[in-house]
Image 1 (cartoon, rainbow, N blue to C red):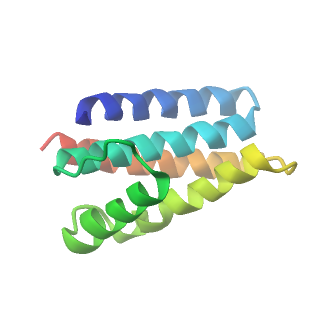
Image 2: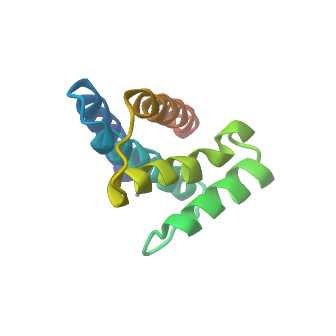
Length: 124
């Protein structure tokens, strides 16, 4: 499960970049969020935390509480990434307000940072 979800995360990060490059900023935000969500699932699975049906709030809470606060595996700055990025994704998907180029770029940067940190930990 760890490898499969990390591969999905990397594929969604690539999709986010393609969307950004083609000025599809709402879609970019969506794919960037799913990239970090799937990377978080991979990180949790790597540490033995598996959910039969991944729930967004539960994955966010588990990643923050178990892997950042308790085990101190990941930097505290990643703590808010999942929730913040889901908020942007919700704006992109469920409102009439479009995501700006700058905000889409920020989503990709955050996704790259989180996926990079998780990838390094998974290689240990």
